[in-house]
Image: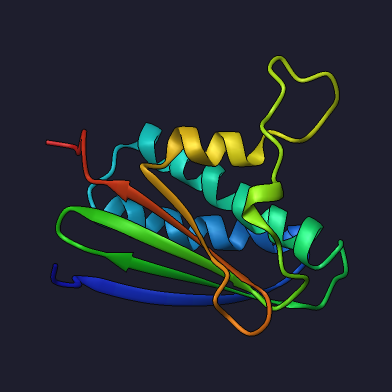
Length: 141
């Protein structure tokens, strides 16, 4: 599997940095050939992943580092969201209640529904890495 493009972005753990990140990634996804609808869905999943890092790994503390990696392959794109906060236990993430009885709790559900692959790399000595992939299906003609 040959790598076509790799980009890395660093942001602080504050939600107002999500818009500039979305703008950069929208351009990369467009270059990769994704339709507008698919791009927007992917961006929702990515923002959920980053928001989870802010809320759950950094416990809402601003000023912490999050690294987002983008890799484009001929058949898919892969994103890695890396934080250096509290280690999560993927097996302890509750299944969502549908319909939701309160706000929140659907981020992982959205990521699993939108993306083709979702995995947690917990092998790092500190923090977490969420890996999300989307196959290049339904590309623009």
